[in-house]
Length: 154
Length: 154
Image: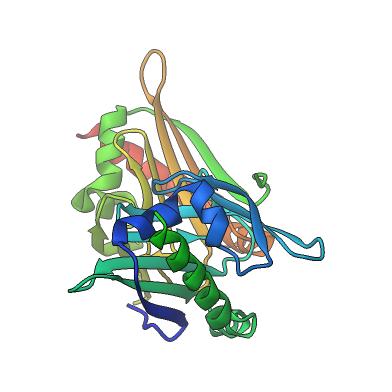
């Protein structure tokens, strides 16, 4: 087994029920509302929630930027764990330059709230450094705030 | 979707029942008997036949060479399709330098025999060229001969 030296991790306690957080991650209309740090927005989402199913998002920036992210889900354990990667497209076709697999883990906390662990696992130290420089901690942190706020309204 | 320009394909009609060929691919004691062109041998196999399950083989050469190949299965459709890759280890941890995903597809042929399609799908043109230079067609072809001979005895 390799170690976790190429991982970036965001670990938070979110003040919202686990089921609501899972819905925000897996329902496209909800995902659109929190997945990008504002003022960026998500205009399109496609999710097929099974191993090898498509996970596609289109992110739009305030100056007309447009990024399409394609990938597949690797594991979907309802309410508990979601893993996806950019390394494949549907049909398990290798695509692009594999950057990371991301693993989101949810668990209940005694007394309420949800332990939220979001882990980006990279193939190389360079990819990890690039992701960190792109603002992983700030970006995923703001998104987690938005996720928590939305989940509390459900 | 990307195209198939980085794929290498071996397509054969094997004179053996599809169920027997599936067994040769998925039972470790059978896999050991055909998976390497002789005089190379396979000394160890671990197979967990589900998405994300381990697929590990150790290949041994006549001059003491030893290669351990690790990876995971991506899709297991009993009797029909098997897809695996070296890009992950169990737990969906990114590992090494992703080289390929391989897809083996079996189908019945009218009148008997099995259509055997083995496709190696690479992330880059360089990986495809490297695989071809390593002797993909010869190696996978000899292995397919050995597979057919073994399957006919079952």
